Image (tube, rainbow, N blue to C red; front, side):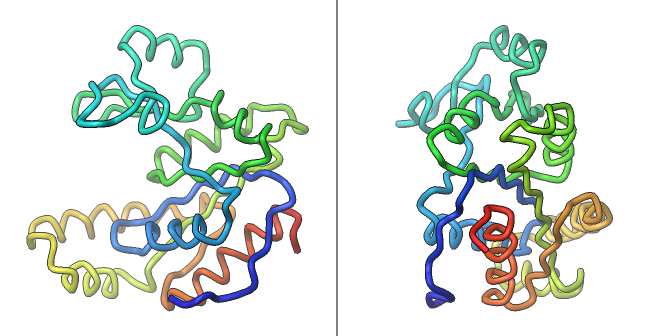
Length: 207
């Protein structure tokens, strides 16, 4: 997609939480945001699994022992956490606050359950807390489940069983879309990005 508008800079940091069914185009929209806004960075998760290949602690993940991870949960240091394939994953609040202090916005690409946890965490913070003031949650949705099926089948990466499972999960996720402050229908990528961009510019004080 070509450049859609003159670049602008967010005037204050945002905690951007984006969720979507698989195949709705969320990853593409996230990539476009990172290309246009250099002050937006992905959050770094922590995990109890061992590093793989050339993964670096503090860059790819924060690698924690199960005991340290449990302490983070117990002390309320994680924005959200979950168990995936037997390993614990979570998003520590500390690095997000450090990014905010440096004027950076943080982008979290998570599922609706994780988004709900972040929403609850933020709601417990004082009204004037930067994370609460800068919290923006956006649900990216396809025009319909039929269109989502067409996209999943068109990319030719999934088996029929996998597609049916993704569609089943998508229906459940789309049923929770009204939990988000903003919803962006990705019918046309350019228009969806402009809509997403405007949301962030307004919330970031640049419009």
